[in-house]
Length: 340
Ligand code: NAD
Ligand code: UDP
Image: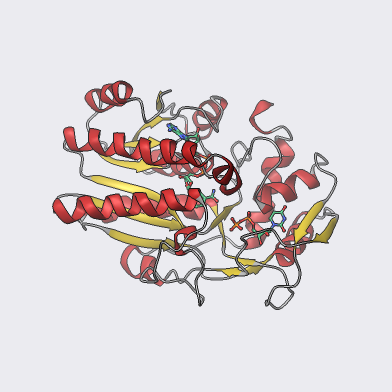
């Protein structure tokens, strides 16, 4: 019989790509999403890509009654918990919103899991939990928690909640995945990253400049202690990241208790390198100017992803050039995102 996976936030950027991997690998998928940062149209696209329309509930994960219905209606093997707000800047403006939404939803989810005897969860954490690290690359054993914004605080807090429960409940298996910087899109160009308003992140900004929606990219600082002076990140193709969740589910079948994995490529790419790769891969020009630093930016952030390879066989398949091509394919086919 097919195993059922509850995917919170399954209509979002990473969630939707993961849903495809799950369906294509024989899982039954149930999605809960409040649509606070996604569109219902994603469900149609998922059906077009996979031939299967996943069961969908439009609830906020904080809605206990709604979540009770889901847990009563389905025999859930594991939850993949993507649901959460993710804008660092917005979290500084509205910290309470982030605590309520991200931590509040996880509290309700964990309560329902306990009541219904569901022990397996994969949680979307982030490289941001490492705060202001002293050295690169980042290892799972590096200290976490010295963070400077409410978004990062919610990720640290949720990791702690999961640790606390697993200390008291040997049956409980949380797989914590610390993502680095997802970019790219499904090769069909039917789904991809569709931020509201002006993008905060580099790749969607680049694609919106490429498509003519925005006039010019601002590069935030070229005076960092890096080879070309611009910041370095570990960009990972979203389909590789999605595949990591499949491996995490396999890990859960071994009942591993609490485990933590970095999901990155292990390779750093600077802002200028990414812009150049995009221009070369797609033969489009990206006008940009160098401006001042963005407050709070780390000069470098990249993973040591050996543990995920050793223990789950996680290996990335796609290059930066693949990611640039796929991000552009998505944006070009959907200049207004999911708004058609
Ligand atoms: P996203 O905003 O595209 O997807 C999140 C989804 O969750 C959206 O569809 C949104 O509508 C939904 N959602 C938010 N709060 C909800 C709630 N209370 N109840 C129900 N649904 C809710 O974001 P994403 O890029 O796909 O990120 C997914 C997860 O991965 C997030 O937890 C994010 O913090 C984490 N993460 C993302 C990145 C990144 O760069 N994209 C990096 C590290 C970690
Ligand atoms: N960046 C930039 N211009 C933009 C957006 C981002 O120069 O319009 C830079 C940013 O300063 C950082 C890198 O691109 O060095 C990646 O930024 P993003 O917000 O995508 O990821 P994060 O910094 O959260 O890892």
